Length: 231
Image (cartoon, rainbow, N blue to C red; front, top):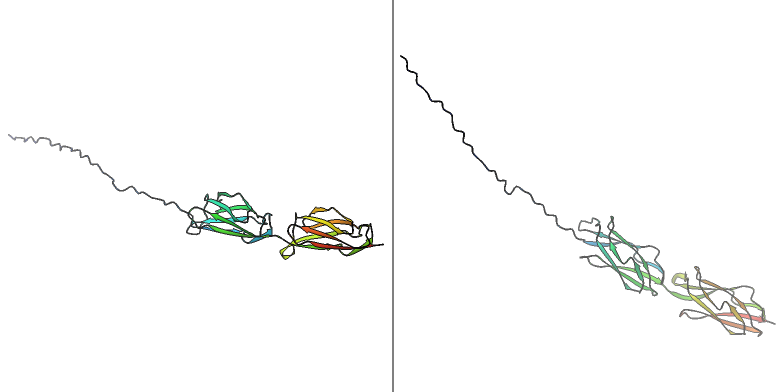
């Protein structure tokens, strides 16, 4: 008889191995440093000139840059009148998409004017302008005429107030005063137009011979008008 060996069925035990994989230090952290302004430059508006007390012809434009020379947006900019007594508008704000800030500068009543522009962390920038002030009274027309006593001179008197470089001074009050001859000048007071001029009519007095009048404006030396009254 054959004996069959009974081989027990072998079922290997399945061992569950639980492995925990810890990914430590695999997370990357990026730190972005805040970029600060490095420079403030004047794009336009420095060293202009205009009649004292008036607006400069061009606005003042400033640009804010970082250390790489790239324009910066949203940086606070402040402008202060440092000399001259004028005004600037707006006096503060933030740089636009071009990194720029623009303002209108109205000069004070004197020749030397200065603005100081600042942004945080940057050396202030100075901006200069020259106010042209009245320097002379010019008799442009009508001097040294003659007419019958008591009559008006044929040609009107034209007086011009000018500054450096013969620049016309607008808005300057001019006064006429007859000092001999007894006549009258009308109007006795006038304000210069955009050409720096005023026009007046001189009616001679009743005295025959030379007649004179003075023209004054601001603190300037007076100009003298002469006329002759004929019999």
